[in-house]
Image 1 (tube, rainbow, N blue to C red):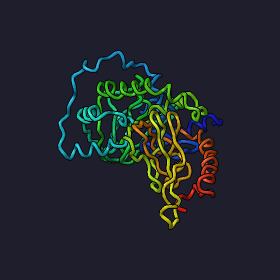
Image 2: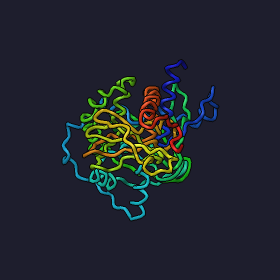
Image 3: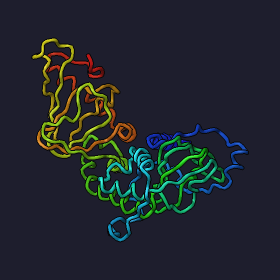
Image 4: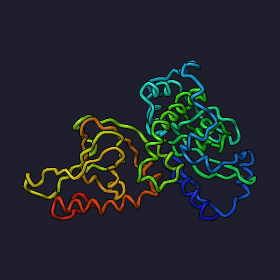
Length: 360
């Protein structure tokens, strides 16, 4: 494959890893046994998109604005306390659920049903119409696709992950076959509930944030489609006046963009014995469209500074997995900012601190 193919394969891997997929190593040829085992796997043309999680909602044929919220009866599958706890644990890191409000999340959990599977069972088949979205509770599963008449295993799920959303979001046939390789269980969410809550919620969120995201200068190096994917993975958080957003020395798990309000950034120089000299010093203030929290993610070190809300502050928040997957093209800009930060510290403290090691 050429550079474009290699790039697409790399992005496919990165997107899938955050949702629990492990990819099989590619080989130059397929064994005859593999061909025989996978003859029943049908090919769906856009295979590469099967693994690009949270692809652009604007491309879908389904229009969420055409349906009213109350046109369908709410579906409830009764669950034991144990089932409810297992379901909540399985769903806690599912990106599609991140932006649901508590009422929507409760409705989704009520509508999900448990499906027990045995080794060798096909959970979904490539080429079929999509009926349910699935979240893995337990068990291992292989992902099969077929290209040019040859079927192959391209990846695995190991006791976590989700699949089946693309056919429901874009009115397309299944783009892969998922086969259980052990006994296990998955949680299913029916097509109607998925569209009414998940797809409509994502569409509303996109309308709200896409113009704001596209206006951010530091994202200009991203393609339009990549900026729209940023909209799909961001969460929103509101902070009260004086509330601490991040703390110096903490490990980093998120990146922040200020949507409204003002954020005060402070830093203590560690190692100072004199309390007065070691008091936190304000080093910056950020307002709408500016970002913070990237330094620890870029350097893989603890937070180098603290951030506090001045008045009510609303931030767009991106977790570390999405940051690494989607903002790679912006990394050079963010690394250049380290030099700018160090210049600020020289002015404030009289010397530069090692921002890549905030403990010193």
